[in-house]
Length: 154
Image 1 (tube, rainbow, N blue to C red):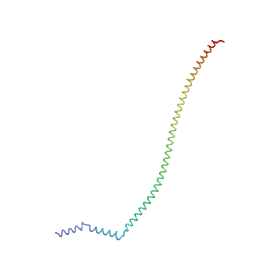
Image 2 (cartoon, rainbow, N blue to C red):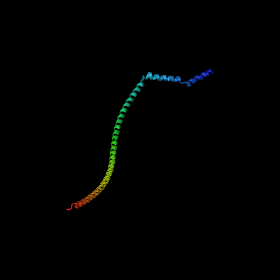
Image 3 (cartoon, rainbow, N blue to C red):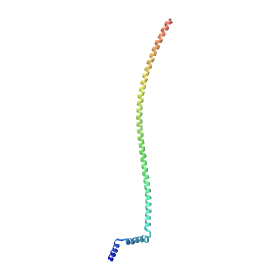
Image 4 (cartoon, helix red, strand yellow):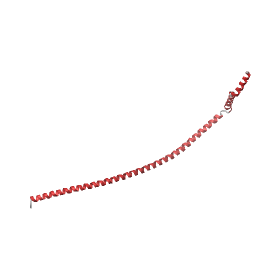
């Protein structure tokens, strides 16, 4: 029974325990990369990294130039839009001022007509008062002349 248990243990270790196989594969890979290839992959990776960095810088420069050109175009369009908006605003302001000026002119015309009516009324009132004063003075002086003639007959 001991032999059977030992054989089963050996079979189990060969079937299930892969550590010895994996350890030998790891040693083989390390030996292959370190000894035989002499850091060739490391140098290759460094050159690829250098190429990637150079390409990145070139792309950044071309992207920056394209971005600058697009920003310049956008700036021109914004200036044109701003200029058009200012013109529209100026026209609207002029139209508003024109309407306001017309309203003010109409109001002033109405006030002027009212002022002329008032002046005409005041003129008539002053004329009436003047005519009344002239009549009174004429009457007074006529009476004084009559009294003078009575007092000093010729």
